[in-house]
Image 1 (tube, rainbow over the protein chains, first blue to last red):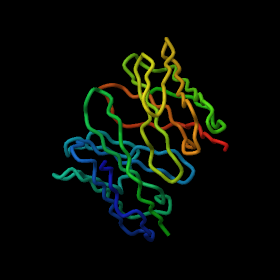
Image 2: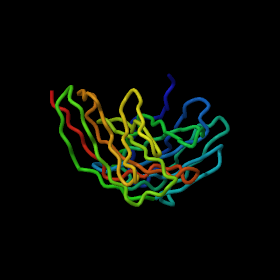
Image 3: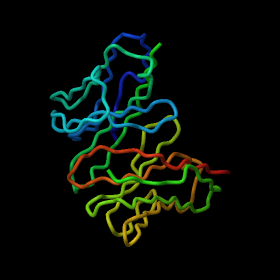
Length: 114
Length: 111
């Protein structure tokens, strides 16, 4: 079965650079979520989109922005990178049915800021 | 968001049942109880969810207390592949769809 695809899987950037992470949801899924997981920490919600509109926002820094495109893929743009942005970034997708909204996660992008 | 309390860690032997508890005393009447797990170096994975009645699927069973203030995830026969961090997450139906991960339970399965 098709899964959530994230690219790149690994990314190394220097401080103050920019990074773009991409997420391709499971076909026919209409909602995309982004989570950040720092070293030794639990995943933290950043932002979500439903039908290409932002649906919820968590602890996402102002330096980060995201959008969902007409083909439902999503991109997380990160500017002025800081050492503390080094983390695993997960994308998840879901489809609204039955009120349960289970989310399916991608393998993650490991961002290292040096 | 309802607060949850789970043991930091648990151990089990392979082929034995595992009962992973979760307290969610502030859960509201419309919150579903979701369980996710995260295997090492992987993204979280949906396990099971329920509202009031006990639920079974191919991965696990979910036992929900009558007052809904606690639940237990049951793995009937633990395997080495079940070693993961297990998260109990109340989610409001029709409300915010985000998952709020608390401090889950790290399950170690011994061969």
